[in-house]
Image (cartoon, rainbow, N blue to C red; front, top):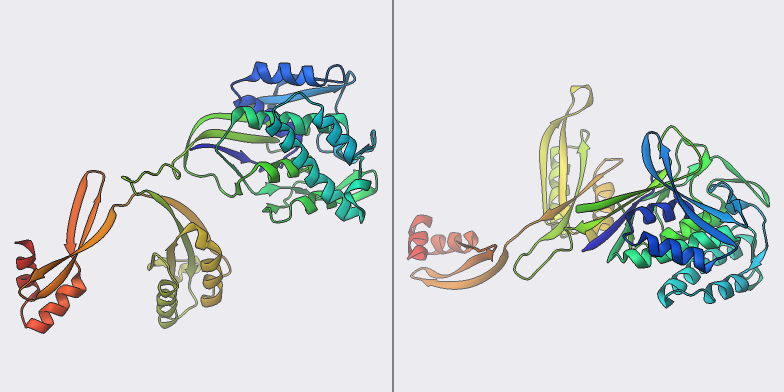
Length: 398
């Protein structure tokens, strides 16, 4: 499956995302000519090579009426033209773009507008985009929407978003990071603050990530064909960029003949539970539907002996088993790891023997066939008949 993964460990702003997507787009000339034609003469797009911490990437220069747009982490928080929500949608509707692109741009602005209305205690119709309704912000939204359309990934996954910390100055004064509108947009989206005192995620960046991402999480197992670096304006000890990885994800490559799937491992270290309590937890997790549960003796801090508790489950059971770990163990944290699992297709058939009917499990796939009698059936037949397991197995192999 053609998958796009967005890494936002240094936040996300509209121009940074547009620059990263531009780098992985194989129709760069079409994108630039279309964007410069759409907004002529108000806006002009020029991709510039830019370096952060020795890493080369692209910084999309957007000139509005011949002037360069303001700092990407601040320009969304200054009053410019006072566009109304309706006027922004009217502008989008006049653009000569595919319907899907215009619809995406409208949806992004609806997210921003609803967030602004919520934090200001007003209606969407009364919102004036003093923070995001300017031409440069409109260019970011439309440009990103068009690039997503040209790249056409089948699945988009975004990392948890680093929003930064500290304060940001806007038309209403000085606000905490994340700004109220950004926090409103990021509801139900995983994000985190950090030690960098700056706004790393803008309302436009948040809305773009939320609208286009199918899910949020760690990077899946995939073969990456191309990587894009979208550079920000500010300099930090860490390279200030959004990275875009485009390639094929293995997880989705499933056919009837090959029963590959993904399983989730949840684990924790324990050194303050009794053996009985750990045994109970192991059985409880299995009864709750875990694919497998096991323990491994380990050595922990201060040379204390401990136990590594490992549980395998379906990815969609993550929340359920995380809660069970916290409920039935003393751990304060759990770890996650996803695995792509290759497995054979399983089926059963019955085989008659002088000692009764025995179920046989048949596993097929990858050109392989394996058969094995169900041990509990063999055991029961041996106890009933008073013969050895080996004797029953001999009849099964005939």
